[in-house]
Length: 189
Image (cartoon, rainbow, N blue to C red; front, side, top):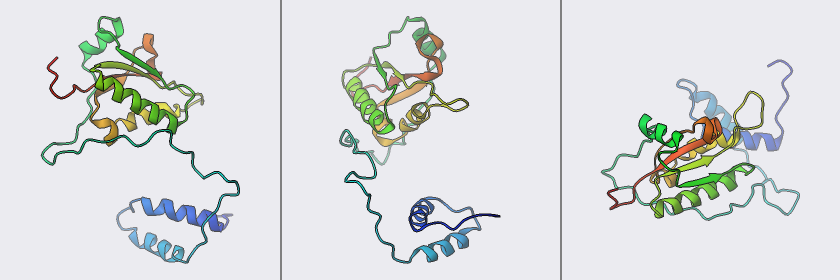
């Protein structure tokens, strides 16, 4: 690149950590190995100048995830069926719970949402509304609006959720999600 600058020591360390998590494009493995050879020089640990850590402390302990049995396939979330979404939109099928994640940081929202869904699942609720907000930026979605659907595919959420879909306009539209919780073991209703 014309006019590019050399990376500083801290930037090289950070880039090396990011590069190790990526999968190389087929045929480009040699470039990655050459980069690793350059980065193998011992580096001093980066110590923050303040007494606080680099990342915020999590508000909750990790949830216990039930062990997946080897004969079961991982759960794939499907969109809500049209009749179910229509009933939720018109109020014929009640939303049994609601959580508003507006103004939360992702780490806080993750813990709060997981706790809410665990409690709702334990109580046997089936349909809840998760309000993420539409985001502030012009031309881009909000961070929670993008993150929450990705969280639903993570192991700690996967066993709780049967399906989800964007809510209708009267329940928040693009800034909210209808979530159908999975049935508890032994429930027939």
